[in-house]
Amino acid sequence: MCIHTNILSILVLGLFSTLCWGCGDRPNKGSKTTRREIVKYTNNLEITKIDQGLVVKVGQPYKGSKASKTYLLTNIIDQTNQKGFDAVIKVPIKSLVATATSQAGFIDQLGSQNLLTGFTTTDFISSVKIRERVNSDQVVELGRDTNINIEALIDLSPDVLIAYSASTDVSQWEQVEKLGIPVVYDASFLETSPLAQAEWIKFFAALVGKSKLADSIFNNVEKTYRDLQLLTNNIANKPTVICGTMYNGTWFMPGGKSWVATYIDHAG
Image 1: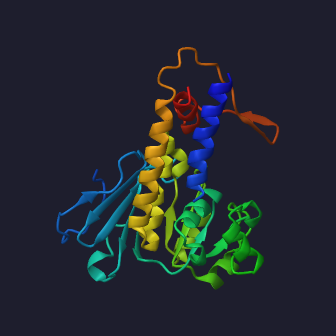
Image 2: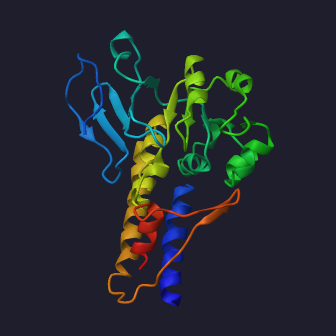
């Protein structure tokens, strides 16, 4: 049991410490068709390079969603590229608002803490550098992600808000869009493998203009993870595992095809 526990701990802690760090797009009819795929593990995220910039498609932007979201990230915005996308965002962005701690992790690893101007429930942030910004009032507390302070958000006027929703109720984010603030959805939590989750750093990097850095970070995560996974290939007797968490009097467990189950399987 000791070796199983140690390897699982290494996998979980190793990848999460680094995390704290198709063409279903809809390009303009006038776009050229030169394209290059950017991601390889994700099921819920596609990033495609075209002549205008990057087309990002989030297959299921929030739990229960029946429609995808497609964004164009470009350094030139004009009338020719406004149609056919849920949002057109000029990159690299100069400011952003985040709504989940995993997002803070990606921002932290990319060294883009100075771009974060607002966050929901700042008490949950553990990044040292972002905590310093919170404590010096450089990051505004916007309340819970299910009931944010719209007035404070308007005052910040960020280049983009990175939304998160575990339910089909996204009326709040739709209201933000009506205010003229671009909203993009982070649905990394819906991925079914740890490496797919980690690869979402490439989406954040595309927003802040640090794609080469993200490639380097992810390649290191991928190699480390695969090397650790090899240590469990010859384990004959794998223990039975039960896991979960209590929330509001209900015991929640990860599904058999979730990224948590994949972690346990790869750890032997």
